[in-house]
Image (cartoon, rainbow, N blue to C red; front, side, top):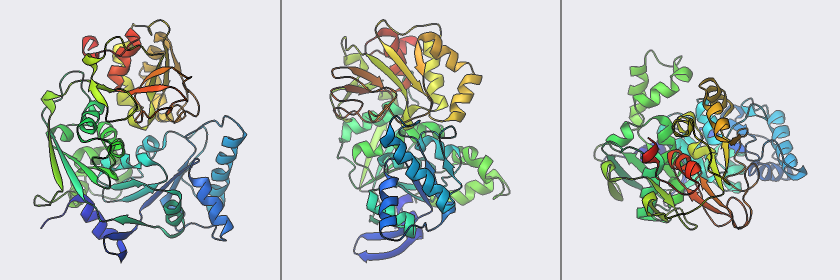
Length: 427
């Protein structure tokens, strides 16, 4: 019997199996940010274990509240900053060099096919787009990972999601994954790996694949995974060209991690891309999804473009194409947060930032702040935001606020009309 990508990665990284079905894996990459890591750092200090297993395999960033908004968030940043210096962690990205973690770390070439990756952040599943097993963990597991370079997981079970066909006009990766979550529910993939396959996925950019895998957790998934292919190699080539004689050689090596043709899946889900339409969430769960055409006069107060889901250059281009020569609707404010400084700079070179500014958007630095209601776009009680983020729980972006999740295209259309709108009329 063949193996899935997750099963192959588990087998290659297995260190111990203390209990049946519980696998202790060797870690290739441990990612850290200033919200969850300081707790682990402080506990390691108390225990007299202020050290790391391998400073070259730890990557750290200040991204959730940046620059710090008050003394408490400044303290969190200082703990991480001092620790990185103390431990000799070279890949530490402080204010000015930082960006949203799940956009910044792939952009730096830190994630490779076949890797095991953890972080104290639920959207670590994003990195599975590279054919890696990447999972968010709690503080205790993060602490062990930092100290020992291992982490325990349950035996992986995989749900295969086949998406085939060309995406219709106005439909993007965000619509694909929201539609999937709407079908299987927020518990539909709990303790499972979501493996994205099919011609639609093969045609996607790495940016779009990251959007898909990013939201695996919203269906309860431990990780999302895409098969490594030439698109993966092209994205990583600036970082790996010294390791391989050619792109074809890199592809041959990376494809060892692809699922076998006779691999066994717990479930297989089929999605016809041609049947998909632009969608958005309603109420307060990511699985409460419906076509944008079913929204009637749903007014919004704020548009938010950014996050580890849809703050990449591809996303900004899509929204800017629609916003060019247009203005934000009356009484609607718009916020754009390019996910990394590199994306920000490239957007400036392409004239995208001017388009957003001309439309009336506030353009902020790279930050996660608004997504979790901490800074740079927090909602007031009763306010509504059309957002390209990934989570719409009650109060997520501010106490008493409501978030409608959608693609950058749908967010741009909503910005123009001041209510949830169909992007297809602007494309």
